[in-house]
Image (tube, one colour):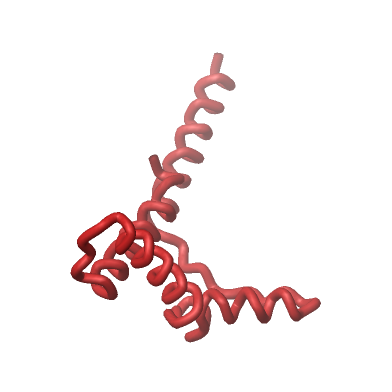
Length: 101
């Protein structure tokens, strides 16, 4: 599903981080602690290029304190752009077919 790509991407990144930070998980309790630790790391310690080198936690804190909205760049994924362009082309062709009738 094209709309699920962002979630899948985050989940993959999170899983990679989890197994790098906690490579020797041996129990359910260790897994729970590792998930909590990885989430804390992602929110509070993992700077992101798309957020100008800030962490998610920093951006959230700043946004809660500001009255003005700060816009961060979002690079459009080429496959999503292609997908929506194809949808628009199909709509246009369908409209042309209906107008000819």
